[in-house]
Length: 231
Ligand SMILES: Nc1ncnc2c1ncn2[C@@H]1O[C@H](COP(=O)(O)OP(=O)(O)OP(=O)(O)O)[C@@H](O)[C@H]1O
Ligand SMILES: [Mg+2]
Image (cartoon, rainbow, N blue to C red; front, side, top):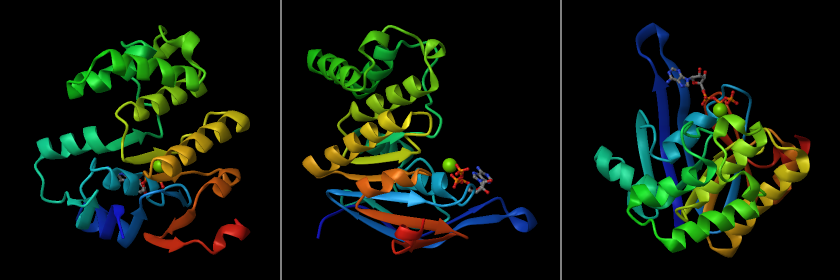
């Protein structure tokens, strides 16, 4: 069985002593190639923390993370950067765009950092912008975009390096339901057609039918499925 992403017995404690908070309490999740997992739970339950750990942005207090067969726990920061750049596409809860870059340049920054900026990368950027309905905004700066447009730029950017693993933190939060669904459908298609793995945090239960599995997080624990119908 090929797992693209394994989180094994992960705990995360913020702070220390009296003020410490245990956000994740020995949680495990295995995501296969071609699998699209939804992560749901109340505000403050640790969803973003979990996603950051899955994407090698944040270290767990204990536990192991295996990305595409490679254990990343003991890697140097430089090696972690490489893994993030090559394997992971992030869509953050806030769109995290760079204020002084145009929409198109936000996308081109990814291949530029990886040393692969060429005509093909430019074509990919233009195609993605078209696919996400942003072609007419490609020379705009983030400040002149709506919240939903910014979110779509962040999604296009996450696609630029053709990542094996897609981690999306409420990617539809500022989109209308039609566009939100189109975006999640695009995620689902990418995962299925190209055997990728994805985890999506969402509060929108209307999106759950597009996912293969729903995982709940509460009180530091993960619970699989079953509650799906009663959400
Ligand atoms: N760097 C940090 N230092 C201390 N506490 C933190 C830190 N980051 C997150 N927390 C705490 O961990 C808990 C989980 O936060 P997290 O952002 O993962 O929640 P979430 O499930 O994503 O919530 P939301 O749905 O509101 O985005 C919260 O109580 C938060 O205050
Ligand atoms: Mg969050």
